Image (cartoon, rainbow, N blue to C red; front, top):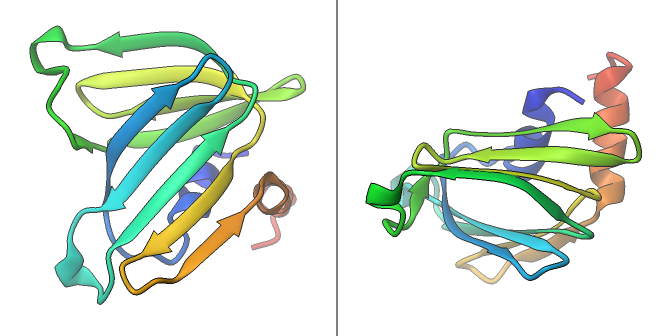
Length: 135
């Protein structure tokens, strides 16, 4: 899976930038919440909640000086396969989280009441299509 695949799946067709409004590790799962930044680019605001099951935090690099300034600018969100799991890197300029987990489930919500849930199966299909060159 390429670096762009997780971003492509999360932000597919969004046409808008996102910021990170939440990162939570409960000892088992990582939950990342992202919100569209500029409502003027589209008619609706979008909120994404991605839950990464069976997570293990590998490293957190953060700037102590600006650690509590939320929302955070999203610089990059990448993933790489690691034997039977995936390594995810969420870089937000002032903090970078690195963890291993299974593929995520994502819930998308808009301010007009549209909600959808996508499972790791959709991401797996996307990664298979991407790695085989079928686009």
